[in-house]
Image (cartoon, rainbow, N blue to C red; front, side):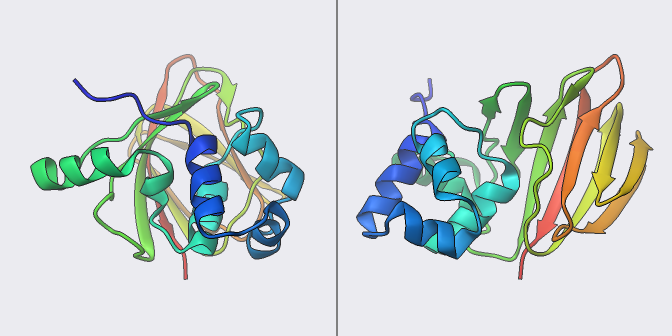
Length: 183
């Protein structure tokens, strides 16, 4: 049986304080407002994948470290090199598919979006590129002013520095593989 993971906010607070970085300094390094960072730390706000990537880069840590405790991570890496990590916030769940890619530029996630729902971190952006492959269902992806709709076995590649949002317009859960490249 796995130990319960600490919420992202608690992990963020601990790692930020360990590095003696204020919320304002982290805000400057990430482009995320200090008030939003505070909300994430207090469990009142949602950290999107883009937020986690920017925070991890600013703290010079692997993004997976914000999603699980160090002890779990060591155990899982030794036992199973590729372990699924679940992170649920509101109507959005994802698994980190590349936990071993510590500080690498390429990260992969398996994303689950329930029927008729939007990613709660709506309208976000992060440095780099994003590649989305639909395993099951369909998804609408708004990139800037353009809207794309992809279904099973279809893909979309875009500049993730442009504001983007995900939405499942269908009646079934959508499952995606999202690969993110960050410089």
